[in-house]
Amino acid sequence: MIAQDPSPAGGTVNDRQFFAAPHPEPHCLGRVWLAFSVMPLVSGFLGGLLWGGSNPIAILSGVSAIFVTLCGGLPAYLTLKQRGPISLPQAVWTGAALGNVPLALFAFMSALFALAHVAAGTISQHLVPISELFFSAVRLILLGTILGAASAAVFWFVAIKGTDLSD
Image (cartoon, rainbow, N blue to C red):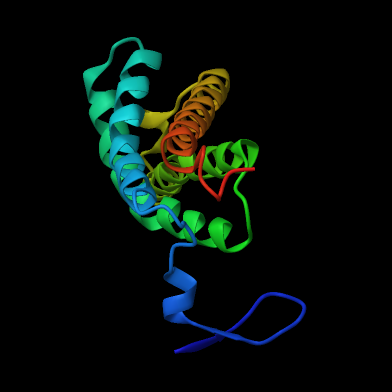
């Protein structure tokens, strides 16, 4: 399949060229896979640590990190490496954004739950004070941002630093 090159010069790039690793060192691909495999462990450890030693949060963070890594982290890495060197701030900002994806899905499902109770007329049984809702949302956003940024920083130090892809 031929895709248009995003560069201003135009041209085409085939799929093999797009997914080809630009690393001249043979061990770099192994470093990338090691970094991707460590990300759920980092996220699970930090999730439990930041949420007061909660094992369910640690497990949920680790499991959701697997899906975020495969569905968001890998495509982000492939896109960033095609654009040139990947800096630590680029990786951290990307990770912070991706770290909030599971929480956005959770918020969407919570909104559906609330709408179902509004439609059934039973929402008054599930009301929570606005201040508690606000601070819970801020806490979850901070958790997702910290987990995503920390996982991306670990990924950058394991897979990118010291290769042709680092600044």
